[in-house]
Image (tube, rainbow, N blue to C red; front, side, top):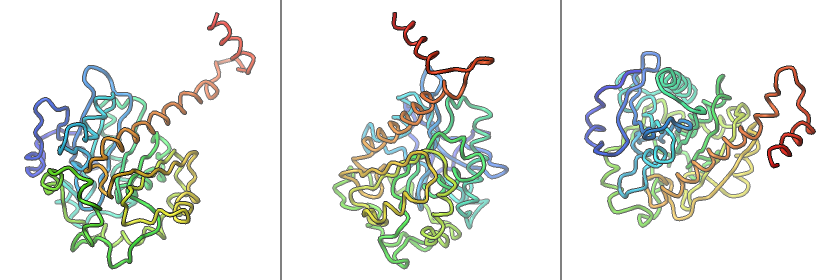
Length: 326
């Protein structure tokens, strides 16, 4: 991995000062992946939160600066996590190498390679946990479905379902954002500066990504059947791209092989949750889900690791507990 000057448009958005966020570049097998990084001060990270943006955005989607406290990167670092927000393949620095973008599976493989490079040079704590938005959720699910996906702690996905709430011709494409108001919902859900600051984050949707987008309802069951890590889905109160009625949610849950699936709703939010007033609330809930995933690991660890040469029984555990409480 190399770290160097970021693309000018993103660098202009970065007002680092005392903030913990800085630009970086990852080497994904010869493909340069740009992104943003925030690390805890004065302590090793408990885990790495990998933030994966949606279609037509950039990594800065997760670094909301319209009001203090709304950035996932700053919040995660404050709570003891490293947060790595990446520009997906076809966005940021990789756009020059991949002008047409990549398919969902190709993007997932590129992400795996980039994270392996990151892990070689950084403390990753308990491992990688993915927070993804919209199209980025497809990449997160595909990454968990691929070989090595079981190494992920879990996934927290917002703004993604498996059944469209619109007709195919209304979907965003390479030529534009579709019915763009559907990305936002009511404008009152966003701080006044949100739209001005987000202009620099908007990027063209790569052609291969745009062409594949409408195929997701058919592709989802096969990918979901290979996902074996905990998954949480969040639908904004004013989600307008995806159906989130009971029938649609049952279809979303049914094919997943995950040990735990949680489906939540975020009140007072539109599709672009992390750019709105609800950003902090959603980010805290996403990090709480990470905590729950870590807790489940810790709770299962003693039973999974009996001492060498000893069969650990319930009686053994009760005797140890009794001794500890004396």
